[in-house]
Length: 358
Image (cartoon, rainbow, N blue to C red):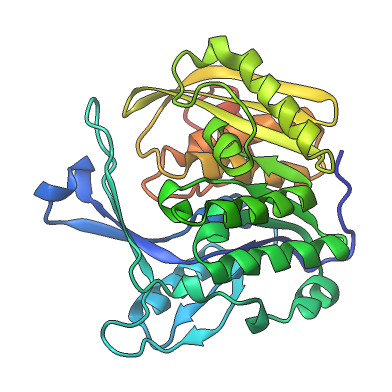
């Protein structure tokens, strides 16, 4: 069981680089589409959305392009998700200067898988610097129960890597619990493997909650695991448990370790499961079929649901259950994040109850 601060303003604090995703309408592929929908997005705010929609106080640390209509769009979106935010306003400079990232992604359909094009040139979030934030005010005067960090912002640039490390160090010394989702991206690590391995290892050693899939643990932290890729996941559950056991041996200061299990049958049908270790107590959710509208954000939904359950002080077996159902819920939205109406909606997914609520 994780003990949390009793004196706090924010249940959950996330650090992130905000951007937008543009998605072709009606599940069409990018190259043949003329109509697109735009949403504000980031992995870390995807996680935080479960808590913010369900009424817990959430804060976002980020940075914005000054006087940018995209920045205005992002701020409006965060407000609509009931999130507080703060961060510096950085001048764009010339037309080739700073901007918010663009993710161009279709949802795929049936046997046609989704395709994602990340356009991160000039990304303003790469400038995130610990000197732009008053950590004493945030962690001590305001107070935070859980700081959530992701390997995406952790590996985005030299500046953001140091930013995340300094946040983790300050959180640790002030009694804030730390959640770290490794979220490995090969393109972010290219040419920085040793530097990032060392930084991620230190953040993991400070963390109370460690989350990652088989690829994340192997490539970020060097933990041997089952073959990456998801084939025959049910038969590999013991292998995944062994991997988590090795993570615990390497990072014994953490209390909770978790991984999701996903096998893709088609773009719109997945087998979805999870494994979590809290102390010596295992919770194993064997993969179950879920129907998928858009897969992006499912893993973030799992983390967000698990953190919400921890923040609510529920028994640990419910942490993984609520996380599993929150991840499944996220895949039914066209947004990268789930927008739960209430806890009951999520628990009904866990119970397999899709009947009309009147």
